[in-house]
Length: 254
Length: 212
Ligand code: SF4
Ligand code: FES
Image 1 (cartoon, each protein chain N blue to C red):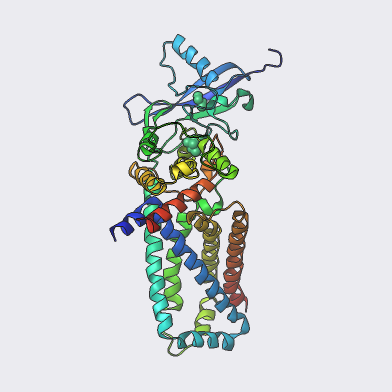
Image 2 (image 1 turned 135 degrees about the vertical axis):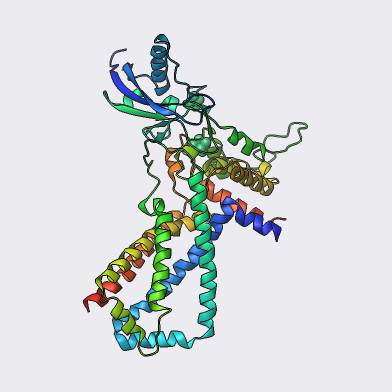
């Protein structure tokens, strides 16, 4: 393709063996990287070199590579998913990097996200939070008429915005307190805003917040780093909604 | 009562305690500042204000104990949050960069808090638990601020408090769940304005007395 530039980068990548609690930054050269590549494709190229040299390739998570699954993610030069706003790591393109630049690549770090290997961390803590209440217990029956339950456009939009969360964990990685509030607030919001989610709202928010606390996530101190780094640009207005719902459930619901 | 403990010991509950007590302290500081402005009226005016305050007697004592109670909650919960949050990330990043959310106020919250606490003890020993039999409060204050080290320490402490409030104010509203797209920008502005008023209002007093 014409207009394609090639750049060389020095990578400082976090290497941590499976089952080990400590790791270190290793240096690699990423040569002749096309600026049309995504960050993960760049890592693929580096891994091919490593494999040819007989070295262990860098382990990293990925799946869809189109910014919708929430599987990918690493901290690039101190920024989860890199410096571009509203972008997952798989959608971060190498044109945003300069030739000769040194790039630090670290895994998400939090007590609740145990490192599995290199850049891969265990995010089952998020699943546990969802299992504790992030659902609607509806008895299935005959399909209802589509417009039987009226929902205002505004709430439908707010719920949809919250539902855009892909559960990647960048909010936890970005938070100075390793808090999971943005994720939990997105999940609580998208269900609570809709009539179907209302009956279980109080029980849901209480259970999810308690589970979040038990899993060792930090406490939110409204630093707003999560909102700045979230690839789906989830708003902290959701965190306020979570707080509101939690206070309501705690003090006013039996 | 069990439910109450469960609610306030949850992460959101602890923040709620911080917010409610914090809002009270902001209100207190506002009243404190208005009272202190009487210093500009000269020694008689200021001493009259102090006398009037003391004449309220038991109301003041009750308020003092209430504030002590709130301070214990605010400080102990704050410290607990601080240590819990430190332990929530046992392994640090090699590179730390802000995404644009943090402010000086927000990122120094625990430190300005601890500093204000130390200052508070000093401040109370200085002006509150001091023998006032043969002197007036105005004399105590003007003697203290004749010392430039005192003035410097006070100004620094006031600056710390201003930064603390600059984050604390809007943060309290967010914690209470009162983040509304319509009002939030306004609340943030009031927060910053309040912190500037506190900073200049309290900060200039020791300097004024020093120069005087
Ligand atoms: S809130 Fe944003 S950063 Fe957090 S898990 Fe969801 S998509 Fe990822
Ligand atoms: S790989 Fe699916 S979001 Fe990046």
